Length: 321
Ligand code: 173
Image (tube, rainbow, N blue to C red; front, side):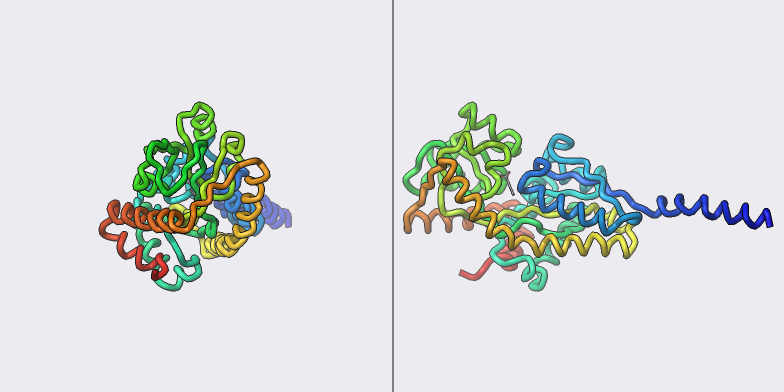
């Protein structure tokens, strides 16, 4: 009798240990400042996974650029220093130049997941980055050029602009001089007059106070911003089917929410006008030159960096003219 109850007690004592041993923790980093526009989709994803994953899977959100420089996130994910990343392709072209091509998609992710474009990229992520592409959480969100000096046409000669790889080929094709910085350095570069302007999407310029140092936004916008959730492949392969399902369900939900950007875009467009940022609206012919140059220079850049895969990606991602 006594022996039996001791044995029972031992089983009870071990139960919580078993439960803990089965909970996997994944370390996560975002390439954008915490709680700002381009981390928000990831933060929602983390909340959902941690809610659905109680006792099974937990994401430890280490944070943003204060924890790791944005341009190092890709390498950290590839090497397994972190398990999960929220980043845009332009931030890890050192690991995988093709990732910057997401900005050129003219078809929604749901279509790319059907037409082979997603699978093509997924293979490159596995091979070049040791990564699984879980979800694109930013789309339908055009980039713009923001300036402190006016322009009158599609000519950027004499302007020095802050860029990432997203804008490099395009702005240079229009004659600009470019300087690459992480988002965290934009405010100071504007304040000191080191740059005359910068590239950034239509949303988010208020997050880090750039509205205070911005006079003009150039229309039209071009491309569509991409921010996505990636998992280290070795970490993924170690997960149980249940754990993978939890991540996949939260990922699918996040990707379906990119339609919300249509409303966010309109809100920030108005907020910029209310903040006194003037719109430089290129007229018909100049707008057409500017817009077509964006795609022409963008694809030329992708193909130059990846002669093997660039042309194939262009077929999958572009809408026929
Ligand atoms: O301008 C940038 O830093 C950049 O490349 C980017 C990409 C996606 C979303 C926001 C910014």
